[in-house]
Length: 152
Image 1 (tube, rainbow, N blue to C red):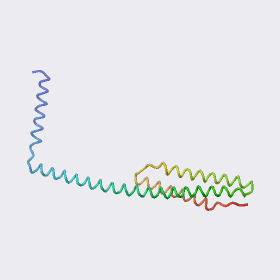
Image 2 (cartoon, helix red, strand yellow; image 1 turned 30 degrees about the vertical axis):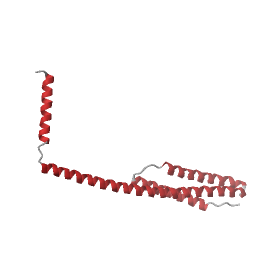
Image 3 (cartoon, one colour; image 1 turned 45 degrees about the vertical axis):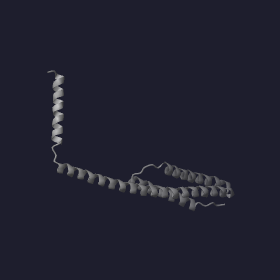
Image 4 (cartoon, rainbow, N blue to C red; image 1 turned 120 degrees about the vertical axis):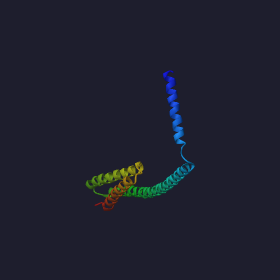
């Protein structure tokens, strides 16, 4: 016998042994295994449904947050434009300083808009950190706009 034939015979014997050993389960054991598999599948479906429900909830919360933030960004932009118009009546030496501060606020508002548009992370912990930092930065800008005054 050649080596190839010996290897074929050994492979065939191994396959035959695996079939015999694997087929040695009683019908009761096979039924129990099937029940376990069905139970596991039901748990997986339940988990998937819960994950989907949470994802939908998180998506709605993010969309609401994004909509509110976009409205604030638009409001800030209008407020900055109004303040720029009001600087026209300011003294020349103050006008430049006012415009510089307004430009900084405009850049900050644009940066907030970009951060919001580019946010992609869906992990809950990172979302909470982003939301907290974003709100803080937005509140800081709104406060700066509210406290901005033009002296003639």
